[in-house]
Length: 442
Ligand SMILES: *[C@@H]1O[C@H](CO)[C@@H](O)[C@H](O)[C@H]1NC(C)=O
Ligand SMILES: *[C@@H]1O[C@H](CO)[C@@H](O)[C@H](O)[C@H]1NC(C)=O
Ligand SMILES: *[C@@H]1O[C@H](CO)[C@@H](O)[C@H](O)[C@H]1NC(C)=O
Image 1 (tube, rainbow, N blue to C red):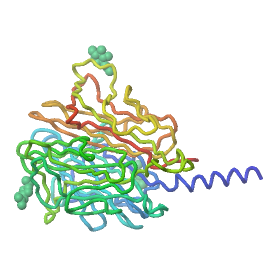
Image 2 (cartoon, rainbow, N blue to C red):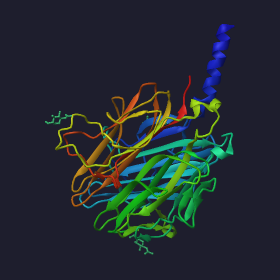
Image 3 (cartoon, rainbow, N blue to C red):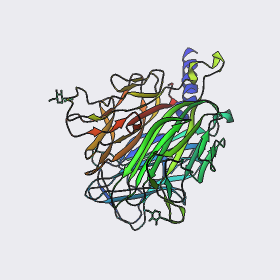
Image 4 (cartoon, rainbow, N blue to C red):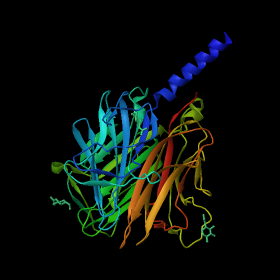
């Protein structure tokens, strides 16, 4: 009898938690040359949790709901990458990267409401030379996805998500980006006339933005929470198109406004052209968990989702300072719910067994390179890279990971190599964010 009760309890716990999570990260651990619009041939399964793929490499939705997808890639030296994310036969958004005589990084994020059977995949642009960088210990090219709000979520007020893009080129002189193409607007928080997301449900939000500069122009964007500066993305390269993006997790109150603006005092020109499948500029967010503010005590700590979001407000030169640690040490905290991120050591520690999502971004210092690796304990996961011989260059990457209690995650900047990062209190590019997607209780 006792045994039966225990078995039943384990069974229920599993159904309630682990079986609900859907998350994956695939990586490219070898160079790839694609010419005919092939689906990216990811050859490393970093994480696969209840994620189903077709034999030709498309993610196939089994559980309807709101999903977030992230794709990143690095070109080979002096070559290009140009990739599109598709939903079934529908073009969604692209990434592009190329820098003369250099490696170039591109990335993007979308949030989509999907039905069972929908197919999501990243493919090379048709009839285009894609030279993608990949090595066993240098995985820059990744594709991640996670179910962020299942359709079955009981309270419809807990469902808030938007994802928007820009269908035309836009010149900014410190003004706001008015994204005009709406992919997702669950809860109607995003206003396409003003470009502003207004919070109706208070809580913890995951926010992303990415953009590509027009040819030879500067892309320089700032994320704002009301009138408060959060962080930036920057890209500028002569004779090409420069890409960058950033993320943050913010604790937002009802009525708070979130927007993306051009850097004040600068002419910023970002690229978008819906008629030609050239959507690069995106802005998206979703509610990770509703606020505890005013919640009855009985709701308790199980609604307090472990999450952190931190940034770098100073230059870090790993070659000159003789730093004693390889870990990137951050000095700006936007969120550290549950004290999960140790600011002194740069290490995140999981206090709950579960599926977690991580995003990191960086900008090199002038004329230097930035190379950062994401580690789960001592295990290498993936990397970002940015280099510019006459300016600054950015990189980004993401990963979903299953972590056990006390597992750690940190960013390694390869001290005593050549990594140098640019930062200032009003110019924060190097950031690290993570949150618990779903606990696993078995
Ligand atoms: C990755 O997982 C898929 C199933 O989702 C499997 O078909 C494929 O062979 C795996 N690839 C590698 C490189 O292990
Ligand atoms: C938008 O920018 C792209 C990239 O620089 C350029 O090729 C295109 O001509 C521009 N479109 C318009 C309508 O100005
Ligand atoms: C980097 O080099 C300095 C000077 O040689 C040394 O003191 C420091 O321990 C090194 N750091 C690491 C992480 O190897």
